[in-house]
Image (tube, rainbow, N blue to C red):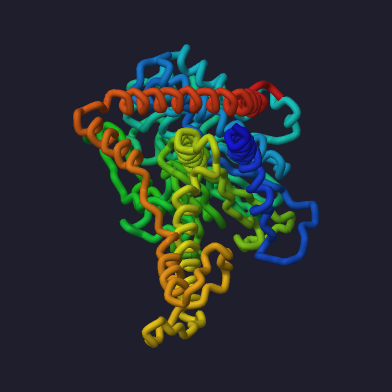
Length: 520
């Protein structure tokens, strides 16, 4: 029982440490492994006049369109809770502690945004606000927040032609889809990329391109950063850099028909991408949509332009390594991208790996509870038996060597023949064992040598024979019942140990869950 108590204590401590790491400490790791980038890779510390920007892509709040699960089903509700909690923890424990001056969302705030009813869309919006604590901005009222619309928010150009209300619904809550804002000495240009490859005579496409032309005609010396949800065109199988974990996604474009708008695209067309870069002339491009990180360099007539396609912040959107990006905007008015804006990619906890870890530890816990002996030393019984047999063999070998090294004495019988008799050094002879004649003395010594070997008690062989016969007659019910009883007792013991471990860790787990879920 003492061994089981120690096992229970070890398992409780192991689970406490595991839960504390997986539900809390893991979200602190980005604070230790990531930091604000310095302009142009400078080793000097930041002056304090820089603008610090945190960039988040593709939260895609899960809804009834996400997993083909029934609305309001337990499975869907559980998946939504786990995903929402992960993003809320990531935002509050991994991103906000960096104290950014502003936060940018690169689109796809929702998953099935265009296809949700007004009530469903409102519910998803409330969840979005709760996850990122944007209800009146709370204690983060000094942090400016900017949004880029995505295809999962308003759909593509063909959808706009038939359902213009989705655009009105989005703009009512998040504001204009094409706009600009300044941070430090840098202008950020936000573009609705879903409309750029739309119908040539489409209203939304005209509005977007007109906005871009107005930006182009604005003669300014400030560097620009282009923000778009859909990435710019790149060649198929173009390398994405060392931070990409999934396979590269190539271009795929589908149109509803001639001049009917687009129904899907992975990247902007080459024509739209080149036109966009030539008009805006950005020093940096930030995009989303791909769900995995990709860094590409676009060649233009005025120099190379780096584009960072950010991975999703959600762990259920096909990326095992969720991430976000930190931007440092220099206070100096420099047209050099390395000086004007510095970037650094930061990774969030790997939630899938954490759950796999939980599962493996659960299996190990159950196996230990099931197989661990009541007396821990019995677990090492075969090993101890093996050691004892080795020791016995060594002792036997030593005795044999001692016999070879013993002394002999010469004895003559009455007929004058000589005999060699081994002397017994260890066991002295009693006086009654020594005869009066030399011949008798030799006989007695020889018979004494054979004395240690004793005959086995016949009753032992009889009892063994009876047991063997009883086994052969089929009397196996008693050991069978014994094994079943032992199994039942072992399962009862496992249940008791599970209850003890759960009594400590389930309340801890629930506390860790809801301390991050309730309002702050």
